[in-house]
Image (cartoon, rainbow, N blue to C red):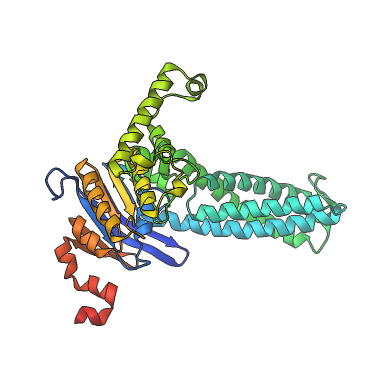
Length: 415
């Protein structure tokens, strides 16, 4: 089985882009002789098609579920019972960031001559804290380290503030901290804030530290704390994609666009490139030859020295496919490759997709051109409002009432 997706969900705040989607694709699925399966992914606008491709390619991390490619968990299973507390923790961190900025300002500024630098420093720290907390809720790995660092700092700050307060009738353990802490209106605020820091900091430090160390030992722990495999590593495992909005290196030549992707297979390091060793020169010749073959394959060999930005729209689409093929994928994700093409260009694209399949590459294609989908795909998956509503052959999808309702409305489906 080349792809297995189970219980995949992705939410953006209160909006659910994907909801409990299950997909399996086997390299041995029925297809034309000598070719790999071509899977169509269709649905109305906003159905979650591009979000699914983004999850498959590692561009975004799912909220729950897992993705397995060739038996390897590229997105390990995410337990909702784990993710919810992390999101709640991030929300608490946002509140703490605000409290810290307000209280630190109130405690520090009255005791010193007001300086713009002091205010800006407090503002910057509060912004960094808030941003890291927001990213933590989206399971971005780097935000854990920032959260731990601030939690340790909060714990130290809380201890200093409490020991600096005159809590025992004139006797203090340490005479440290700004004198403004002793101001009567600020004392309850400082005490309350210190208690919040002391309560929440250990949870942040221990919980996220377990995530950091656990990511070295278990894929499930990795997912729970945001250590998802990055897009470059997913590409190295054999998944390549194109984008709905063309993303070429517009100022580079056609050749250089393909050669840039092909460099992923390079073995020469920085030193060899600087010294121009014989091995590095041989590798560059191989890369150039491979790029030439790919451009011939997609029909752009005559435009190799042109700037990518100067290509017609249809040629830019084919160049993006050539660049994806340069990484030698086993699975190719095409996000609306026929968008903006005229009928002649679309017909050429159909033959190109079939030829890619004959080369042993499984294809998942998102497209709104139903004629192309019905013509080239042997199996079609239909999404609507983030849920999978149908999965079958073109003939089965054509007569499926749920699909008709999704595209044309309930009345059409009943009719």
